[in-house]
Length: 212
Image (tube, rainbow, N blue to C red; front, side, top):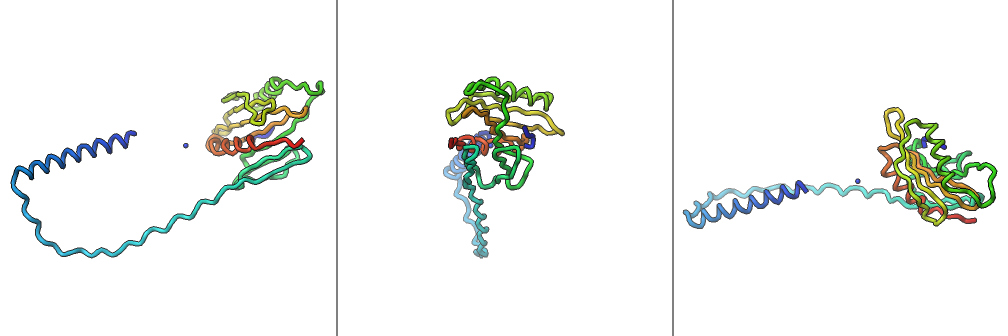
């Protein structure tokens, strides 16, 4: 297991607008029943040089999906082009942002102890995963635990966090049982980057497909 791994102003404007309308109506009433205002003295027209329009902002680079397939592991998925795959001896696939290698999204296939074929209780997988994390990170906080597998397999989604060097670290893992194997799709990031990285993780999780 790696750890590297978005009405007060409106109300104010409405109030100011209403006050302005009342003030204009009041002044208009004074002019209507009082003396006509003296004509303004003629003034020379002021010539203003035309202002150049600011340059249009450059369009933001379009983020498109890339495709990854591992026929040996029997999986394929999609990930955004501002992430890249990196070779790893410990993961089926390891993805990192193009600008940083400290945040990761990975798919792991951990080794399992001897068990009856086809009998892998997802609850035991989840408990073992959490026990391992608690040993590594004292003070581990469980942020979220839900049954969530977008492909219809037996799965659990777990979000945990812990403190490290003055920062809050977040790990989100989708634990899935498929074909008598356990797969862990995990996000490791820090709290500042969590919202953006979680959106990427959710996209990848929904794109994950089994090819065997």
